[in-house]
Image 1 (cartoon, rainbow, N blue to C red):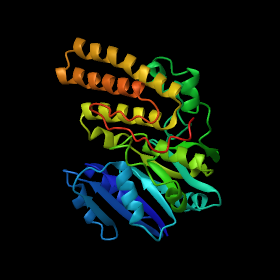
Image 2 (cartoon, rainbow, N blue to C red):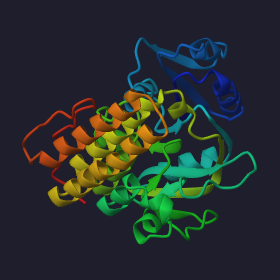
Image 3 (spheres, rainbow, N blue to C red):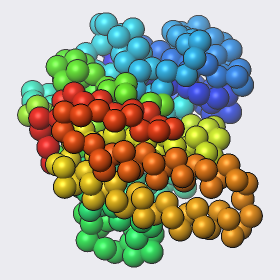
Image 4 (cartoon, one colour):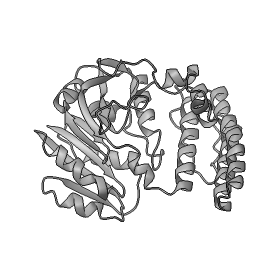
Length: 324
């Protein structure tokens, strides 16, 4: 039997469709882990008698809730992480079979929009190097999307119609080999509440010698950005930058980490000025001040020394032996 874990956070407007689609599948066991939603998401999940519901009293984040859900499926060797705004269509059995093949740690399927087009640039990516993240926070990936770092990271030219060995499929539709998930230490719950936890897990799987596959016949319709939109703007900024800095601190060399930190600081300045010019609240400016201070703390951090990032989640010092 294949397990399916859906982490919900104020997902009432999409959760029912996802659960209805999942229940059309054969031989699946479904768990919804709700992170203290206030919109009735838990009530919607409980309408489905076949679905197990775990209702957290606070927002534990995507990684912790996913770990909860997988732990609650002890008899499932393959477990699908599925966003509440994604609806599986076909190929789930094949996705599970591939994930359980010898040497495989995870398998990702094809995400499509309502019009059926594959969500390129998001569906499958390479692991981001320091240059790619620096260009992202400086806005260069939007201004010059054809730059080599961005093209490499977003796998320009990748064929979504062909199966392939890949690095990082989207966590919105990701089948995990339970044994591999356990062997690498599960999802890192320090990436709270969201962003970069799936990248970190896939990187640790690759570092441990597991292969990750892309299976184009496994398809899910995906709205995209639903959970992030449930967070207030200033929290999205703080959490995204905080987890980006944490990822860099955990996986990059000192030079790479400092490059990313400098790029975050430089990018914060025009964003602060822009907030002032367009008349945003003083709180909007203060967000980028906090981001700047966090990046400065990351820049000053030396190996073996811990600095808490002011206003942002603090990074872990563990598991830094392997570097990109």
